Length: 417
Image (tube, helix red, strand yellow):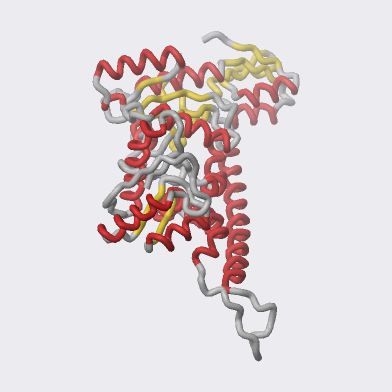
């Protein structure tokens, strides 16, 4: 069921939005038997749709023996309950469908906790819709007390579970921080993008690692996966694949996956992968930018990577490259499937890494042993030699370490290579 508000371009994108909803339904294991649309001036506060459209929907439900109605827009708890009462079958909205998919896709204990937290926070305001047995417990011996309703009992249990999950995820966040600290010296790039844009395919193609799961389905990857990529000429980068984003991603899900997505905030470079073959790639790009903004990831350098170029006719591909390059000169165009299709990305990564970490000669005294250890731990040491009593280390340094050394009064001289 698609019911967009009347605004410019709404009808043009409605078809693609409903195709995406149908793919979500398929991923969740449902079979789509019909589509109904209505353009609204504004949603009805009680039933979202108008009375006539609800009658039409009820007729389709009876005619096709429908067991589930999926709305492309988020419904309030009362709207969902009222529609269910009127049409006589279960109703879910896009947010609930995405949560269900995440629940079936979660593999690691961390992902399962994150999905459960998001589901509980989504469910909490909808308990009234789910429960009808709200009578008070009867008084008497053994059951005297405040007289909680079933609703109040469930609400209390859910709040307790939410608190417990948040505490466990806080520990996960601490563990991830320790892991990131151990990789402090490496150049780190995180792959972000719309779901099914080919992020995992790029990671597999760059690393050759066959354990990277690739599937032509929405949300095939939930857990971040980091692999080292050899770019040649003594250049290495740690590449992390992250969970994909989607239009109208439930904010509870974004919040619960915050620990996982911390990888993006710590990255030296974000690779924003765009599906060049998708007709709404511009909208998808804006969706990803919006989610990153919600996560507070706004200052990281970003490289636009247009994937699936092999799916475009040659004239369309050339026109796209000309148009995008005029707006974003450093964008790269790749194909994870074509031979040598990822070479432009390798070159761009190497160039970005070297530009952000120029070769420097660091002149140290014998008492600077602690600083020398930091350089070896966090930098890319190329060689070192002695000059009198001083040691000269030739290395590529991350920006933070360069600043730390400068504050300590260390003599740093940049080298043209």
